[in-house]
Length: 251
Image 1 (cartoon, rainbow, N blue to C red):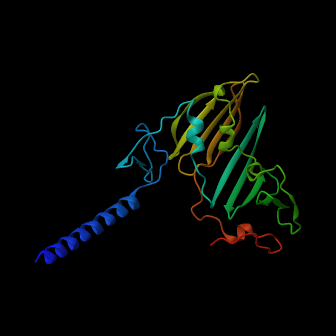
Image 2 (image 1 turned 60 degrees about the vertical axis):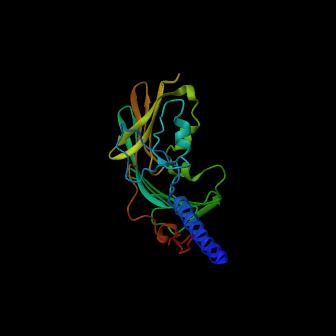
Image 3 (image 1 turned 90 degrees about the vertical axis):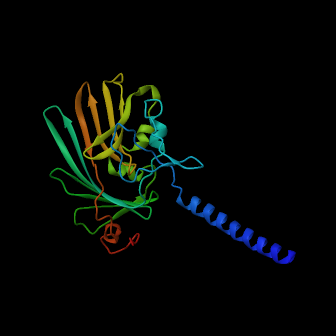
């Protein structure tokens, strides 16, 4: 009789143990990774994540100030694959010039198609080691070592790394702002000794620069805008040279 009771107790204890293990596994699987969460003053996006407190999920807004903005920007991550269009406008006394830029990124490669106003398109493809360059509909492709020229520099625009390189004492304003429906971290420098003021809007969702503006003695001399990614994304054709050589396949 004692053996039967002991056997029932052992079986019941084993069942309870299994239930506890399953509950722990489910709890770990439901935890979300940490990301920046917009404060209450800005409407958060649908995929704003919650921070794991160890026992339950708790939303903790990250306050952005001139002293903390670089840490907030550094936590952002760009998508591994995307395509977007950029407009860059340069202004000077008595005139201006506009360039249209298309950027495609995938598999470690970045393609940039830059079309200055009334000029032919300059195409570049680079993986940070080798860069291919050609113009318009030409079939001749020049290639060389990328050297110190990064994929970002090939685009001819600022990036969030420029914000990270700013001395903290040059940052005058930093907060969250909405730009055409895109939630951004905003950074503005104070006027330097040469009269320049730099303004950046960095998308919280993509980690990419959504807009930028440079002023000289209070006059705008540069504007850049690219608030949203193209919904179609990149294709294998974007990473194919004029002779048909495919540098990377896009699934």
